Length: 120
Image (cartoon, rainbow, N blue to C red; front, side, top):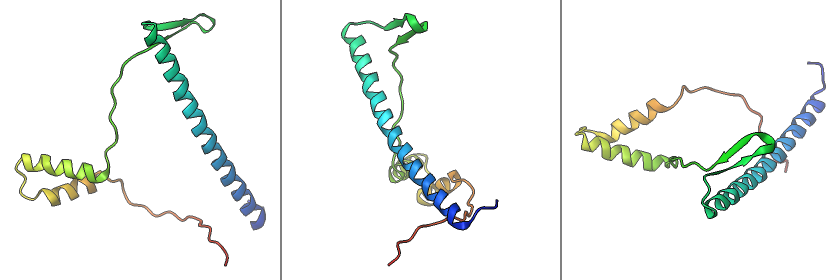
């Protein structure tokens, strides 16, 4: 790579700024998508229709029910795991929980990064 350090840093800053804008735009689009989905679902439920046919695209848009799980906070996971281990008669559930949580982590690695600091 034969570019000057100044132009490389400038390009890096431009890319970071563009990524920030893309993330903001994606957030707006995701929010709008959820809003439109809610509108279509409400429309179909109001008319007691299981779905709607989109003739121009040869598609059927149907309302389906699915279940999901909210993510627990790390502390809640630890607490719940402790209760389960106590129920199963583990002698030292605290250290067992720590070992289980440690085993779930991936391998540790080091990565060199650039960090901006403000000049004073």
